[in-house]
Image 1: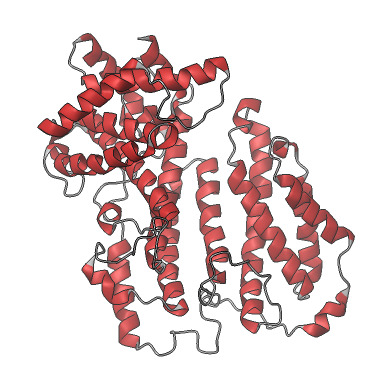
Image 2 (image 1 turned 135 degrees about the vertical axis):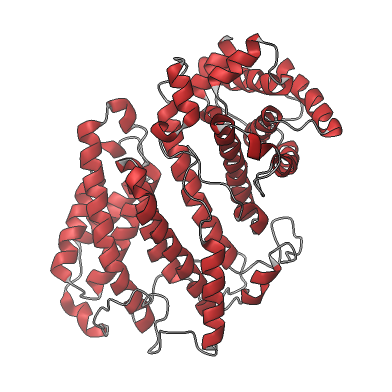
Length: 483
């Protein structure tokens, strides 16, 4: 019992399981043995590091495993051999695979994660049939949350290893997991039975944000060209992709940017539809990610130079396309700076010291670094210099706030801002660059020639087809929650 309680107190993946129902099945001896063994084994393995202050390291083959993890593998083989399909076994396999991928035997974890998709299909995740159709709200929520957990791990792994995530996994028929504890049927059931924990609400909110960002990031990833070889040196093909999408797999820069723009438009529509149910922290994280994508994906390289260790070059401020992109990014950067400053101020006013340590520091730092670079480039181009200088000073003030005290990388951003403000160049730079008037055209950062309405050498019918296909493909069939 202590291991179960500790699991729900410390493990962020505890939201996959309803504590009240697990305890009910525990006392009735109806809980899946595999699920209990996985919970016990993971809790002991992680808990001993936390209690003893040991660092987390990758396990070696000679490392002694605890008995519960060893027994879990015996039960896993039985589930695999006999196809014992149930929600509890599905949750157990996903949990064990995540543990192995992160802290144990990664190849075993990848194999189990693959098997979990077979179970998900049997449960009806991809067609809303089978067991899925007859589940109540709580079990349905746990199924959805478990699937999103597996998908998130898969998509990250695909990007790291040079693969594209299979579109079958991306375009399923399940909603996003609950946005908040108030919309979570599982959390409310635990709350009624006094089985909720102090961090559960935070886990639910963070998980929802992560899945939203992961979903739209994966959509963008499938728009990008495939690599010829991945990290294993194996040839990468598109044979596993949706055949209907293969017509639009053009790897030229303009087509790629056009497809990315469609995804970002879909992302924007989703934000407008769903933001009413988000907390201020969730809204900041999702909106900021969307705006950063608008900036960063506008600076896609025209082509790959084919060098394994290619150095990223500084932007050429004599390139008129780059100038237009920087002008467009400038106004987004104003908004990002304002939102970041407001978010920090509001968080410091209402959050406890403990919750301040749980702010999305990484995203906030990336935002500050991005806007700082955009401001510096635009200052060199003499674009709205007075306003840009004001925002550079504002960004520098943000970089000195106390919330960054444990974030060492912030020092490099602070130094970059300080050095530029101290030694900022004079207006002599203005005569070296041709500055164009900014435009309100939202597609200006995609098509930077004089005819930005469509990529060259592409028929209008093709663009209509791809636009129609992507809108249908990316339209959220059911983004509302069941709960």
